[in-house]
Amino acid sequence: MFNHPIIARRHAIKLGLAGLLGMTTVTTTEAINRGRQTPVRYHPKRDFTVVGQASLKERAAAKGLIFGAAADKHILLNTLFANTFTKDCGMLVAENDLKWRTIRSNPHTFDFSKGDWLVKFARTHGMLFRGTPLVWELGLPKWFKKKVNHKNAERFLVEHITKVAKHYAGVVHSWDVVNEAIAVSRSKRSDGLSRSPWLEFLGEDYIELAFRTAAKADPKAMLVYNDRWLDYDTPVGNAQRAAVLKLLERLKSNKTPIHALGIQAHLKARETRFNAEKMRGFLKDVASLGLKILITELDVQDEGLPADVMESDRIVAAAYEDYLSVVLDEKAVIAVLTWGLSDRYTWLSRNSRRPLLYDSYFQRKLAWNAMARAFEQAPKR
Ligand code: XIL
Image (cartoon, rainbow, N blue to C red; front, top):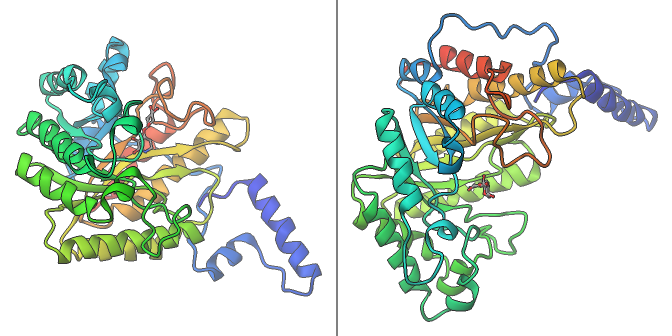
């Protein structure tokens, strides 16, 4: 989505070769426009100025939005990080502390100690609290494979959702009831459903069962279907959006108690194939089903960007702002949540250096400004 001289040059070489082969040579921007993709907006002099001293949660709230981030107990024990977190975040998302692997060390007991600590932390600092995920093919404990089978899978699913959702009823804002059920690039099915143990044991109705069980256990929580790869105008992105929309339509037409779509939004700074028109269309289609939308796991991979930190930070910041300026135009979007807050603690540490809003020393980066600017530009809900 964001042009960078090196990337542009690479494109120009490719397009130039196309010219040699008898096609018309075009510039990168023209090429992108022809494909109806959004023209790149990166510019070395691009302005990331922010006015005023307000925190991100205040800037978001001014537009009727929630800003927050994911974290676990063990990183919030770092007081410097915790101070940074509470200043900006209006919502705390449990990054790993509510996953099966964390709370189900054996098939018979539930350990809510870390989750409860997070709830207390959120309450102490006036933050909303959000849980993820009740049902997912990953993040499962080691015993799962040996213990769960065709015969008992339904009992395990219903018991888990009921116990966990009941435990946090009244304190949780929203749950990712089902996470990443669709994986078009890995599925052999026309509906794109991922070959998870839940699908294998229970068939496609496990999704509906999960939502109905969650609604019974906590009638007040916002129930969310959460998924990834929804952001770009690529073959996978297009197919994933279509499959997710179909699933949501099916759930709604069966009167499943589902209230929102979570868009993970793990962005890639080098990815140029963002199509604002397609994204707006997708968000509108989701909203027209009566669903809210949350951006649930936003971060920007900086893999492959120039080594120069100032330069790569600008590209990352542009990625945040360009994406959010499109997404926040849709009034069904109610929250922006980043997957971590500081580069010190990120699941991307293997392939990214500076994907988040704060650096490893808890200093704001341009990406913070980008977030603040996106809230500034967003229409009021
Ligand atoms: C990730 C965590 O951030 C890591 O710490 C953990 O090792 C693996 O899971 N999509 C999701 C999240 O829905 O739950 C994942 O979180 C990141 C991808």
